[in-house]
Length: 135
Image (cartoon, rainbow, N blue to C red; front, side, top):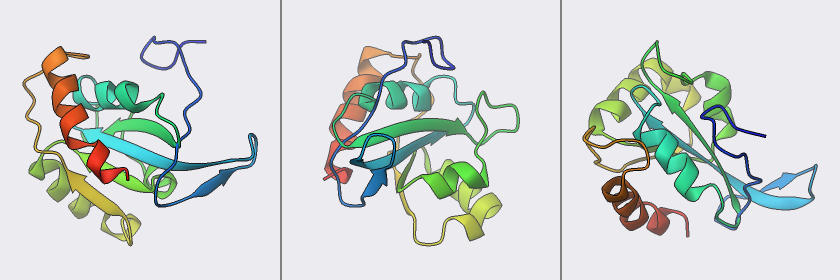
């Protein structure tokens, strides 16, 4: 069954520092949220790149009001770790959702809006920057 981006949906679990038990599967997983502006290029790419990693479940959202999947308090509550693409995203996220970020790790990847969806250069940057924060 395709996900909201038209890609084949996959079951996503993995091992990391924060643990949650998935009551459906009886496994432990860490929830990782990727955020950009529109949720059309960078954050959906990151969601897909890390979707099949063991021990994590991924999602993505956008901070703009017209984003494909807008950031919500519920999505922030779901996330154990939040990755933003730019400093401006961290600022906007803190400004709009400060009370929902209490105790959350928000990591800025410093990736500008210069890439297409699943761009090889974007994937290389994500592969270089994200894994160190998932250990």
